[in-house]
Length: 392
Image 1 (spheres, one colour):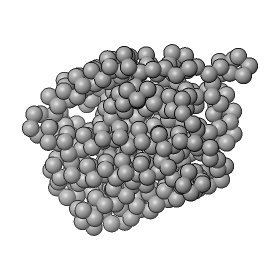
Image 2 (cartoon, helix red, strand yellow):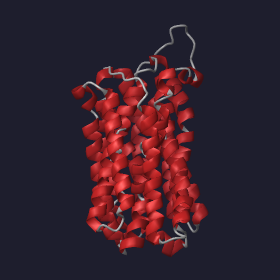
Image 3 (cartoon, helix red, strand yellow):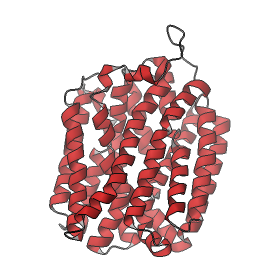
């Protein structure tokens, strides 16, 4: 089991890398391929949208075939193929197709771990384990920051992506041999169950709006907009952008470890989630108000957004507590669909939002963007405030 989880964390590390590396390559891709920030925003959003859409078949596959075959095959084919296509890209269309393939390849990795946690460990420690996987796996977020910037400048971005694709292929092969599928759970009435059974759980509905928007600001900014922001307003190079994205990545890792055990320490999941997301919204509004406060002052606000935006494991634990055992795969993947799908949708919209603000000035474009993220988070918090609290 420990070996299985170790390599699933490595797979999730690659997933974190693939969702975040575009930020540091933004300038190089604009120069080499002539793509625009809007093209890259769409590509980043496409990763999340495709990832989200594949949560439904992934949930079915986890319940039907188990995490071993589901993860190894999808990561091996989609992840390796997407990395190779990106390395050979000649235009924006190639980038879009590559990011879509990468979204397919990464779709099952985290949920395979969560499936094993839900089926093999005590419910009370689900949030801690879920946060730990994201925390350790988020080292991929770090690799997609300053190390990727260094590799792209030293070896070229194409060679760097080919190397990561080769590593992805190796990890997927190892997963096939080491992952252990937990025993399947049978429904009380013998029925297999479906997504409709998940949708019939009324307690989930007040959680869904915050699930849809809670990760979108941190993922959208870290995955793309930090790069253009510093390039446009501060004239930063890839190395400078890499330093800021590294700081934000470290804050996101710290946030995952901090959120994980908090529900057991303070006795409430709802209070932990609501407080953290309100603080994240405050950081976004402060960044919108003072985008030119200084290079490192802005970086600290980006780090705060990353830290407070890491409530996903506790939200997953809150939602999972209402899902019956025989629907574990469908339940965790549906919740993940809402979260990652929200990131993809918001990221796709963020390009036009940014462009709308450009009519006034480059500064106003980013102020509009940050305010957009902040207001979405506030709306999600207001609805979630009426949700029912539950701890295991």
